[in-house]
Amino acid sequence: MGLLKGKSKRKATGIDEMSLVAHLSELRGRLMKSVLAIAVGAIAAYAAHQQMLGFLQEPYCDYKGLRGEDCEFLTTRPLENFSVVLSVSGYGGLILAMPVILYQLARFVLPGLYPKERRALWPFFVVSVLLMAGGMVGGYLLMPKTLSVLLSFGTEEFTDKLSPGAYYGFFIKMVFAFGVAAQLPLVLVFLQSAGIVPTKALKTNRRISVVAVVLLAAVITPTGDPFTLLVMAVPMYLSYEVAIVIGGRMSKTRSPEQIGS
Image (cartoon, rainbow, N blue to C red; front, side, top):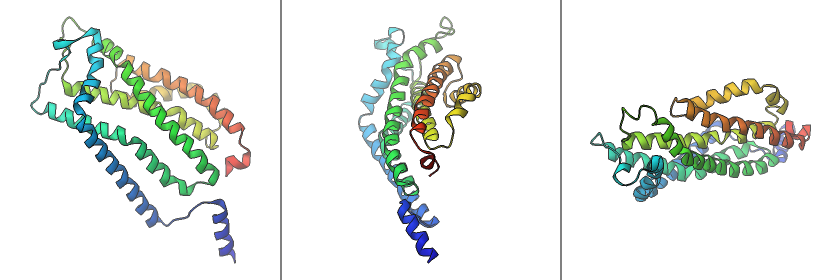
């Protein structure tokens, strides 16, 4: 009788219980689909790698108005061009597959959520994709200014002729770093709306949060220069304040029973 009540209670809440083996099997399937999406995206990116390389090269050309021969890269290793194409294609495949990866992640955690939480997860999924794209666009637009600042040191002693491997590697890491940093407000809003982190705690620990934001920016920033760190940390802290406002309003609209469920 108690077993029947337990089953009916789980059915009423809408939570699907699975064994550990079933969870691992599902996780493997989700990972395989994500890897397949990355592979397909990488093939598509390789087919358009010439256009992608030209698009990524534009900020370098915009740096101090470089055009023509001055905009060319200096290859220093025999396999550098080949490795750059593979790297750009791989990262391009990852970017193209990001919606699929986030979707598979959402589908994996859905069975463990209550019906109301399931409905609330999809807006977070959509916003996550938009924030990732917005952060990457911001990183792309800031690239000319970043190059201008970083290459302004010792310009009389050094020639500003970059190698393709160094430039594209730095560029891709910068873009991804801004995309990851843009997820901070969404994470904070989710933690507040779920009742995991109270809004009051975020407000009263602003000083600690400033240090945490700077440390996080230092970790995900591909360079150690103060300019890039500042460009990364300031928007992250502003998004922290925005997340407090949004998360605080969302948590107020939920009853204590909803937050604890």
